[in-house]
Structure formats: structure tokens, C-alpha cells
Image (tube, rainbow, N blue to C red; front, side):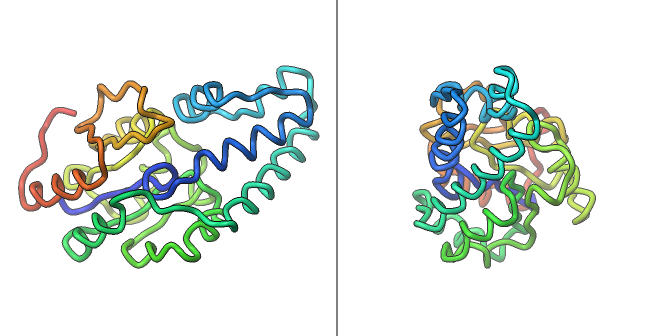
Length: 221
């Protein structure tokens, strides 16, 4: 085991509730009600866009583009108010620093990612970062992880991914990479039966990674 690829939102930083709030508020302006359960199903499980709900109610694509831009601005504003680092993240990254190659493969736009980590003090732990602009199709499509593999010469058999959602797990598995899942409160009811491991805390990921250093990874995943 040589490389760990981390998701960002909901795993390293507590942003998913903010993203939901920004999306819900903008959609409400065109009469679309987005509940938290709907957001979890549409976005975190299936990796689809909540703005499809607006299209289904007859909102034009031109209007949806403007709504999406407004949501992105509102989300950026919420991020600028401060983003909590999730429990155990800094300790785990510090434990692994210098022992493995670490990267972030996120669905966040670069603008949002930079706001999130402007004061997080996390970026120095990572050797590589891929944001939404760096690949064509988002999770659960494997494209984000396939892009990371191709761009940085990562060997699947010496790598694992850490995710918090079903869509992230699906992306990693479709890319042929083992995936450890650490659910958060929004994703804890998900089906993670296909994960290499499922842990309750990110600290367990650090312990597992240290145990795997220099050892072959389990063949079936």
C-alpha cells in the first residue's frame, strides 16, 4: 500500500449540510421543495443533480443555469463564514504524512475547494488534488479516479480510496480501486456492502493504513 486518495466533502470537512442549504434555498425560489432526504437520495447516493427537479416542473434550461450559478455563489458565501474540519482528520493525516502518498479527489469546484481550505491547514498533507474541473464525469462515474490514476501513475493494487457516500464507493469500485468508507450523519444509512472496509471514525483509517504498509492488500473487493 503506497497511496491513499481521499474524498473531501463530508469526509475531511463538514460542508454537505451547507451545500444542501444553498441548493434548497435557490430551488425554493422557483417553487421546488428539496428536503434533506431527497438531497441524500439524489446527490449522495445517486450522484445526480437536484436541479433536475426544477426541469421536471418545466423550468427552462436557461433558468436552471442561472439558478445553479446563484446556488454556487450562495454556497461560496456560506463557506467563507467558516468550515469545520471533521473530528480526527488532522491527527490521521499527521500520522500518515511521509509514510504514504496522499491525494484529494473531490467533486467540489476549484473555487469552492480553495475557499474551504484557505484556512484549513490541510493542504500541505496532500501530494495531489483533483477538483471538478480536472475530469469530465463526476462520481459515481469512475472518471475522477481513473483520471487520478492516469495523471499521477498510481497503481491500483497499491492504493485505496477513502469515501463517505455510496456514490463515492461506486466510483472507486468502478475504477478498480479498493474503498474504505467512513459514513457521516447524512450518509450513515447507506449500503456500503461493497466496501473494502467500513469504519465509524477516520482514525480507524489511519490505523488500518499503518497495518497495511508493506503488506499485500486483500485480493477480493
